[in-house]
Length: 195
Image (tube, rainbow, N blue to C red; front, side, top):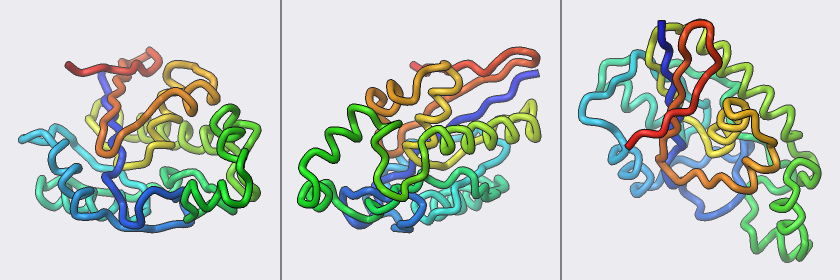
C-alpha cells in the first residue's frame, strides 16, 4: 500500500512582497492564478485536494477540484505560520523599525521570531500532525495539499529529519512549486524528486 502526498505552494498573492502568515488573507493575483494552472499536469492524478483555509490557497484548490471533479476539504492546521507584529509588513517597513531584525531572523529563525509570532517548533508540530493525520485517514491515495512555503518547509524538515533552522534558512520554495512525498506501508515518508 502506497500513499502519495504532494504539497504545492500557492501562486503570487496580491499585495506584493510582505510577511503574510495566517493573519493576512490576500487572494491570488492574475499572475498567481497563471502560475498555479501552469504547474498542473494535463490529467491531475489526485484523489483528493486538501487546502489551507486562506484565500491564496483555497480559491485555487476549489477551482481545481471543480475542474477535475475531485473533492476538496479545508484543513485549518495547514494555514501559514503566524508572523505576529510583522503580519502584513514589507521587509522595508520591518527594517525601518529595526535595521537588524531581518538579519537576526534569517540567521536564526527559531530564536528570533517577531513579537507575537507563532513559535517555529509549534508550527512545525502542527503541520506534521496534520500531515500524519492526512496520511492515516487517506492511506493508499494520492493527495494534493494546497498550502504555503512554511507548510512545504515543515514537511521537508520532518521527512528529512533536518533542523528547522537549516530548512527555513536554506530551502527556497517558489510560487506554485510542488514537493512530493511517498509513504509505503510500514515505512517512514520519503521525499521524491521528479525529473
